[in-house]
Image: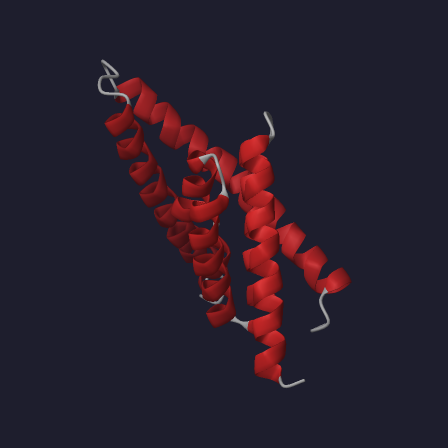
Length: 168
């Protein structure tokens, strides 16, 4: 089997697993954000196995299919707005020299995603009243949880590379 065929087949399988995980996230009553975050592991696997292009393909295909098939839109939108493409950007950002610059880029992406989510929530719920404490809590809590997520996600990627991947 040629490399292109292998990468395409692997990308299709990984996309299906991501959509299945997003479906489970939408029907289970608890752990939705955790399952959406778990779906991002599949994009990371595509990046590890084939590079950035297959990762982008998995993100786009799984996002479109999830929009069509997953009954709960909020889980799919969370995947589209942040968790789906983050592994691709993480792989690119971690090629940059300097840990501080890597974290700055990662936090910029996170805060841009939080801003999109915030404006989406504002559009759904018309008036929050005094928004300043709520916005500060969203960004502060989001950045702290993100730092923990990124650390754990790095460990999951390491585990995948060293235990599952054939590209060792």
